[in-house]
Amino acid sequence: MKELIFGGARSGKSLLAEKRAAESGLRVVYLATAEARDGEMSRRIAHHRERRPVDWGCAEETLHLAAKLRELAASDTCILVDCLTLWLSNLLFAGQAATQAEAGTAIDCPLFNAETQALLDLLPQLPGRIILVSNEVGWGIVPMHPVSRLFADEQGRLNQRVAALCDQVTLVAAGLPLPLKSPATKA
Image (cartoon, rainbow, N blue to C red; front, side, top):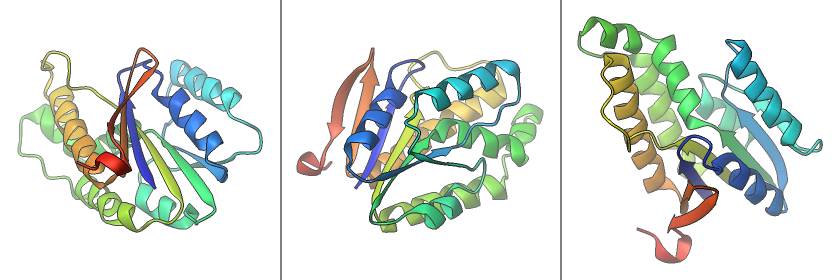
């Protein structure tokens, strides 16, 4: 089963994903996409680590998510990917997309395109349980900065495409899970 859990900042989406992974009855691997580029992000990562059960496996992948999922996925395993938002940001800044957006030129980012398509192609084929965490960033005002607009647009597109492939989609607001799609109500 594949599930997308998304919501705003501090909405409780990671806590819900961790709860679902713990209740899966499967071996759990936490797949982190964050990079500790500053003290604040280091503290966030440490907070997530402290919260996880010690018997969970942990892997890190900042760019090549599909390849890492292919390596880790197994029928007896639940992989919790936290989160697609940081992965997308990593891709935009690792390639030329952010620089191109800043310059106001056409966006041509082979790394971004290849990696997002690889995830979308692989996701339906993966064995075991996959729980993907992502942020909803499109409910605010349209950002003024070109890179922020590019990010918001691409995050919205990625969330839509991943949600279409998942068996279950849950929106989290104020710590409350709101089921949007389940195996019984597939959209």
